[in-house]
Image 1 (cartoon, rainbow, N blue to C red):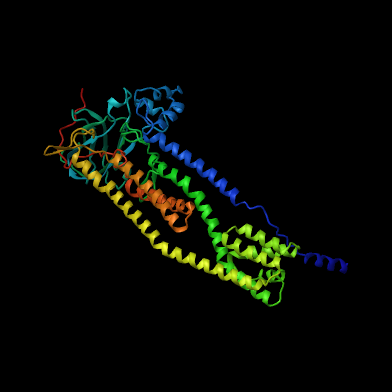
Image 2 (image 1 turned 30 degrees about the vertical axis):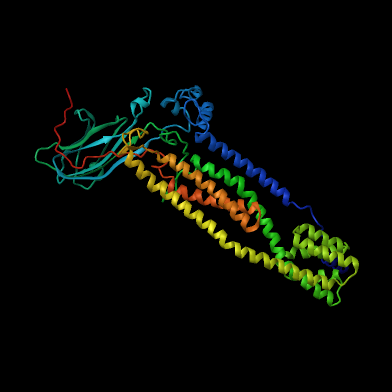
Length: 536
């Protein structure tokens, strides 16, 4: 029994090391990354092109909208509305409502934090914005209103609160009685209107219905669901904006069609170049430790060790990124592979001219039976000198790379300042009329400055910044390493910077054409209203 236990222990101590060369998957991974990145680049490019207006359509809407809505649009009964997006007529409100990406969503307009004190009767005017009936093709767009209020008096007092039009028609009213027993249920009030038409000069009025009694305090808030007739994810000019992302401190539109232009170049240039630069950096790290390995190998050879024993001994040393390769050579030698084959396979795996040249010298010296130690020392010194010169070149070029990046940041800052500050100021000073068209403008002598569209300039600026990133990044990479992969990596990073800066600073609601939500605009002061007339 004890003999069996000893045998088991001996079996557990048996360790087999076999790390023969495997097929290099570097190019396979590169091709896979290229395939995915090119696919994503083409998809994002197609999204941008079909929404950018570069592809004209008969109805003036973006091609993406016409294609998507042409397939998916349905009315409330499930009947297809796709034909509304395949004509030369601009889709009406009903057609937009039938398409999920164009449906008009309400905005909440609130009048709050209002407090009236010590009055027997008091009122205020307010406006209600809403969709223009001319835009709805006869469809009634319901805009509900909610009023929440609290009324208190020193003694129980009957009161009435009403909302009426400027013609005196009562839309809704609430009657109640204040209480002094600190029961809030008796003092609370409210009313709901299923629909309040868009109009100006509605009145909110409150009356004490008992002679000689006053209401001590009335607080309230009014909420209206406002429809502007413009789809919530589109602007006035039908530029695709995408859904809103609220970060709390900042609201973004990450799927605005302009972003797809930058993402197209990012996907086409950055992923594959980033991967290839990692491969090249890994080779560079191997080259950095290669002279130390050759020097130590020469020292062991001078000490009387064979090349096989020397490499097996060095496998336990620390060579950073070269460790795996030295251990792999040691394992191959332990299984009887010839030294000349082992170092040749090592040179093929690393694949750099520096390593291949040194290994070729060593292999030739080993074959000829020469003094390998001298060859190893020479190869080590030569490799170290080449890496030193390469480092000197990188340090010399680094300042130029910094200048290219700095110039790009300056250019980006100037462009964003123009887009956010300068162009809107000019557009505002030249605007005439509510349509914001290109008619009108300011006249200076015999010269007329036509109205300008900030969105047009913002679009041109973003395209310019993106192309500047492609050019600057490519030049920076070529100067740094002479490889296009390095240049495309720099370009991708510059494009990513421009995406972040434009989305956080330039793609503001007013610049990308999002209609601002109007307020209820209550009048600045209260008035003493005329008595309520209920008809009859």
